[in-house]
Image (cartoon, rainbow, N blue to C red):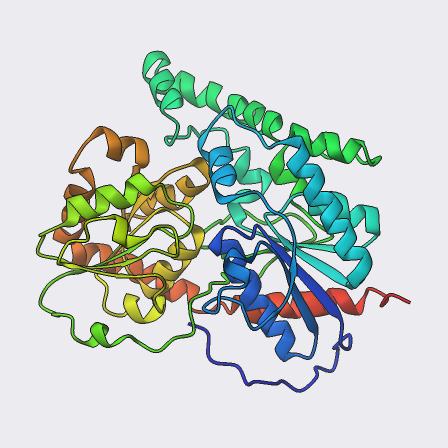
Length: 430
């Protein structure tokens, strides 16, 4: 974790003076909300007014962001957002896109912020242009075109792609999958491009192109996405959130002679993944800590005796005792596990989560599965966890190398410095 910061900081010599910064994440996804909250608090400590906007699901949760000034904005429902990611054919409703853009324009005209910070909310590319407000974007390295257009990316999370790859062979699949994937993304983004054209704007065809803003902050490290970032982009290091809570009493009562498995499926897992995890890890010689992140009501499941289930946990404290992390490939959990040097088993449910799985495989930090594979093979989760635990010293040794490389980064401070430098070059609204 980054060292604690004082409650208030003296003004920097090059500070732009107090400004208003509006944070607008994909507000039904905890990763995007969490890192906006961390960065917003860093800027608030420096004397700026920060406002968070979106759905109240996490932004009004007392454990997440209830202390920050809030503006409601419509957002895609969790179900609609996940269907967009998990289905090749599904695309957003044009009416929902229009409602989001119009609500954003209304808030921007009323608040008149000096800067909007977006985190995977592409409608802001349209609304900020309408209002003439500068836009900053929080990105991951693999959302840049250099990675998203990778010539050898064949998604494993879509059964139709897997079946087609078996039919035509791996070499042909590697040639056909990338252009087919770009076609799918263009089709999914068509409603947003239509909304932009209706307002006299023309967006590029691919999602990873129009996620970019006037200021682009890449929130990972060279060790995670080694290709150079384009001109005008700034690599600041990971920004991760966790609840500000004391270590729970049960943490000290764990039996340290038995392996500890931490299960964290973030806010974007499939309910079936929880169900299979409870079944497959039940009665094993492992102690299992599972964070629901408000995705499920554990009372609707049979929770095994070797599980501790909480809505949120202080992740860094849990990772101090965990031997392995079982997760969905979310970037937040990947960054936290990497910074703690803890191996993992990734069960990705859509293409965006495959990047953590591929890195885990390539660096031999654990294993990479998909929801499709887990559904097809009962017992696969437990067998994979057992396999990683059986070779734990070697996995931990490799994970420690990445941990040490990431320790030099302080993402929130570096990102706030970049934002302040940008604001110093932008005249305050008259």
